[in-house]
Structure formats: structure tokens, C-alpha cells
Length: 301
Image (cartoon, rainbow, N blue to C red):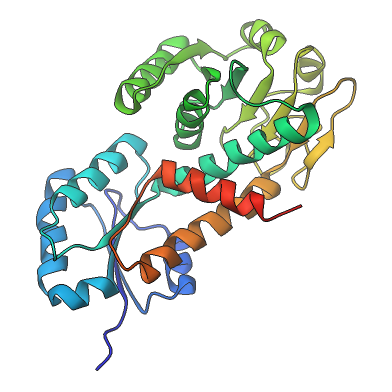
């Protein structure tokens, strides 16, 4: 009898994301089982429960998905699951806490494309400010952009200390240089935006982090990208469908939430399908998601 494809979904939170469950089913997994409240120390035992029960052939029809919200914890869990494998008992594992890995990958890939198309340049050496930068998407977008040579500032809406902690812990964990900055007031944001060549808005839905006057003061701006699909726009003047639309008063272009979201959806879907199709186990984090985002965008005009 042909084995059914099983995806074991681990999250440290009280509930697994319905979004990710839907994505897994639509990708082709036939049995999807969420496990909630999973601690990091439980990953090894749960992974080995999953791999040893199906035999060397059955593991090819088995996968593990790691959710949650903490991007550092998810990376640790992915590493722990990989370390728990005992070849030939080895399954594919994907991490995407709160969709942050695939969203950040899509966001940075979209920015990279617009820099090239609209300005003939790339992220290397660019001053990049992330407002809402201490959240899951902001932190991973910062790590990816820093890896491409950008000078990344993570902004926090309350205080600088929180931003500095997020920058330090993320930079230490993923071996990159980030800095934390105060973005709590117009006065604090003004000098940041004046120097910014790229602005990313990754704050909570329905929160505007850059108004029209602030945007007008961003004289060096090349690209502004917003992942907020709930009105008001996170960046004034950037529409949800924009994908390289010129912004008023300068040379910058905007990227909206649905343009990013379309790429994010395709990235997550393709990674889940890749788990099903893989002849050898694959381990999928935000760097693999970014490579997939680049692939998705390379196929579009």
C-alpha cells in the first residue's frame, strides 16, 4: 500500500497557524498533525519518534514543519531537528515562524529586483531602515539584507534599548552586523529617513510608520516597501498592489503588501512541495526561502 504523506507541525505557541495548515494541505500533504506548546528540548525526541516509526522508505513520505513566532527559537529548533536525524532515518524539515522567513525572503527579493530595475544597483552599501524592525519579519529581513551588504538599522516604536537588543541577538545568532535605533517619534525618525536609501515597513497591521511629510524628507530614498495590507498604509503613498510604482516627489519606487505577499505565498508553497518531492531530505530556513524568492521573481517579467 502506498504510504500517505504526513507533515508533523511543531509550534511552541498555544496554536498552530491555520494559514500554514492550509498551505500544507494545498501543497499535497495528506495528513497534517499540529503539536502545540512544544519546547526546544522536546524537538529531538519528537523528531526521532517521527523518523523511526516508518522505516527508511517511509521517511520519504514524512516531513516536519516548525512554526511559532520567535525567529531565533525556530532556527534553533530547525538545527535540533536536523541533529536528531539518524541516517537513513531522515526527513525534510522546514521552519517558517509566523510566516516571517518566507515573508522576509519575499520582501528582500522584491526590493533587490526593484533596485536593479529602477536604479541599476543592488543592496551592497545601501542605508536600509526597517521600521517595526524588532518583529519577526523585520529581524529576518534585516539579516538577509545585511548578508547582501546593506547597512541595516532596526527601528523600534517605543525605545532604542529594545531595538539594540533585537539587533544584537539577531546579529549574534546569524553572524551579521545590525544596529538598533530609536524610531519612537517623528524627531527620532527624521534623521534616519533623511539618510535612508531603502525603507521597509514591517510593523503591525493597520499601523502607519511613515506619513507623507516624513516620506517627503527622505531625499535619498530609492525603494520603500510595506508589508501592511490593512489600512492605513504602513508607508503613506505606497499602495498594496504597487510593484515598482514611482512615489511622488522623487526617484523612489514603492512595493506594496500584496506584491510581496504574492511572492511569499509562492515561496512557501514551493518549499512545501519541494519537501514532498525531495529524493534526499532538505532543511529549509530563511536562506533557502530567499533563494526560492529569487527564483520566483526570475520567472516574472
